[in-house]
Length: 514
Image 1 (spheres, rainbow, N blue to C red):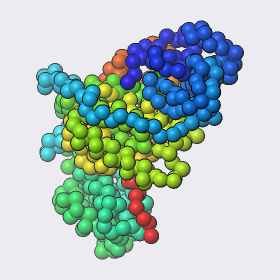
Image 2: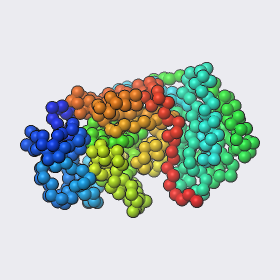
Image 3: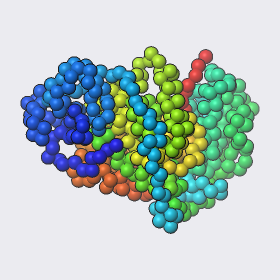
């Protein structure tokens, strides 16, 4: 979708497609300033990342960015006018899903030509990018216990186990007071099961209270899990309560540590990479820099046999037809449309972004509504065919570009991706986001140089170089791909250096709490 190969820094405003009736301000533009390439004088101050009318737009006419509808004029708009929520109308419009019309198969590279990284090969053939022991709560009532066990294993106490990245707790706020059957508890169990068996966990403890609705034995049965040397279980009411369960859990992890430490990294092909794609704190530059650069990196990954997982269903709403058009089959395209329809019903009458209004940070960054945000969000997936659509936390088994149905809230979305098998997260941000995602590394891609400079401790790569004119989208995509390979090989991400990721496990809490 992004045909902007490189940006000329001298231009104060950017034309993203010849058919657009808006320009995007590259820098703050003063009221009265001329945009010489279009012969337009700015009638308002145009903040960086915001839109300015390139020509007269009649009331009710579509507003086009990348030749894609992002809203409609709420009044007659003069050239040079700032375009934002105050004069843009959000409403539904007809979209042609044109299933498979743009499908083009990808020529995957031969094994000998594929990039590789240093991964941890598990006995079942899966490859890990990190090596943790996980402590998983079945219910919020065992949340403190799992954190106490994990917290006991400080860096000093793990010093004798240099190949173990840490002991991490996966606590959550549900597991009881919920429906005992149906989608909500199935989703929770699917999420917990995905983490318990994740390749990045060398071992796991699962801890329940005993009287919760999400019974430990039913969780294990539903997920086809059984206790063994790498998977231990405790029920607090049977073990003797809080203190005794913490002591038993610490003792169990101590027994696991020697085996967990007995791993070495080995060279493996990039086809073992499964990347969860996230964006948060988006701005008007997200669709110009970081998101298309990540999409370019995912196109490279798919050619090398890997998997790219696009998610955040409310944040593709309005541009979902660009994905159905390149679906591998009508069945796959229909799955995506069904998920969009589910969300429209689920969100009916609610003040959430799929119904128009994006977050205050998105608005301040220049995004008027969900259509405009979705335009950038979908670019993270690149341009290769859509080969499958998964429900939340389902195991991702197909190689290539896939979609997983999740909310737009990043911790919830990424939790579903990791449960599905993602072994690395790539997270684009324009406003700045502090986020980590144990047990997988998370890479932060900044959309603009000022934010990257301000938050450099949190950002892994500056895609703002595209805006500065020092790199093209394709060049930045290649740099992102190389960074992914280094991080998957053990190089720590900024979020890992900061110790983030202990509290970002957030299963999607759908259903009734009672």
